[in-house]
Length: 110
Length: 116
Image (cartoon, rainbow over all chains, first blue to last red; front, side, top):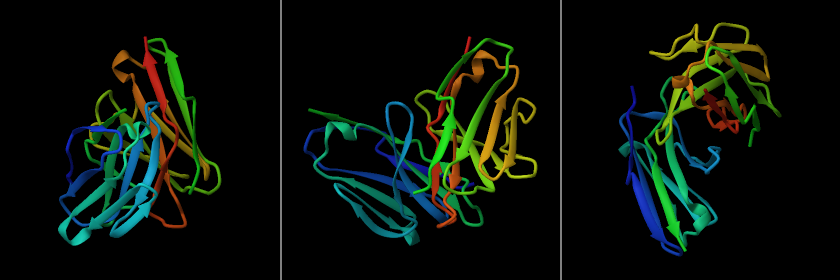
């Protein structure tokens, strides 16, 4: 099956700093999503981005499907950005069955 | 985006009892829903695919007799953890696919199960 690798596993930032999270996947995909898991466990949809670039406020994401990676950019980080960021993909021929990476745990310090 | 609601948010049960978790799609119909499990400090792992009107499909290593899934309507899937043991304590979370994109998944709030 598809392998999803995220890096770095842990990241500590000072408030106001920028960061880039990376997601590599081992095969072609139908879907790629980025999520933020809050302290209560809820998964917040950040981006649905099987290819291309999207921006939403201080966050943006780019997926280069041909090279099998996606990047999540966080600019001017805030303490509320802290949490775990997951990348998840759906393999070709599947619908809805997400394969998750191991996540990046982000801590933003004031 | 699509709204998925899960209930309860947390539950504590005694070892040997059964617990039912509900997952509802609130503003769309979902012929397929998905159940995941997450242990502390780990990622989410797909347990099973819930299919409306037919049997669920379980991932390798997931006991179908222990984790009973029923998808009796187009807006409701239930996961019943039968004869729960402490090792079943985990975070269970469901998802459904937004029919307008047919691929973007939305998640319920999750259920934290503690078996004592």
